Length: 356
Image (cartoon, rainbow, N blue to C red):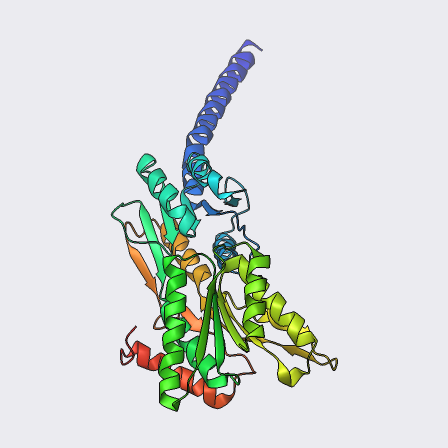
């Protein structure tokens, strides 16, 4: 009996030691798991326009969600999350707050994020930051993604010039940022170059709402342009651009389907915003085309590189017509010959026969 008890004690002791070693192994493995999770985590910060803007921010959020889906991440501090400022005065404090959170890679969308992100990047050098449509800099923990929107806008100008019946075309911008001005310049050059080929005199109306969120102001500007005989308006006004669609819808619903005015969308494909019912009850659409910047593609691409521990340190990544980072939507209302003309212009831009 004594021998049995002695044997039992030895077995118990061995069991406790093994259990203790197993527990220690489990505890030491935990930081490795957290480190791997941290490497994957991403956050998106927007200004007060929010993510439901049918424009730039929404496209960025789609890119974040695609990345999260590809890597089985859930929404929250261990995966991915969205942060939007209630007003633009809170952006700096919001960026600092997110920088102190567990997120490894932080994306900032829009010109209002540039200065706060660069400040945070210096303060938190171990974090990765990505600016969308930003000027270049020399910080190793910051990458930028820029889109040659002037190229896409040029093609929109070609189509607008080919299709206008009133010979009056409008452009409405939001704030006078570098990227919006590029939209304006590319669009106008596309119109002017095409008009010169056809010996046409085209009037171009230009207005800025000085906001990316004031829908009512943009609607008033669009209504005024349509009253001045513009039959096509291209907007680069972010969320405020929905005001252009509102103005066009009011006009088109009161007229026959063959007397519609048009809107050219921007950033994502805005074709769905042009659905309406004409005076005769016919279902139709007044989005002529959209100049799309593949912000979703860029964000998913950069996040995936970071996941593979290949964050593009200090690089300025360029997206354009040649790499499909920018493209024009081929809607069915565009006649075949007009689309062919726009695609020839696209190739000429890629081949540098048309210089922008």
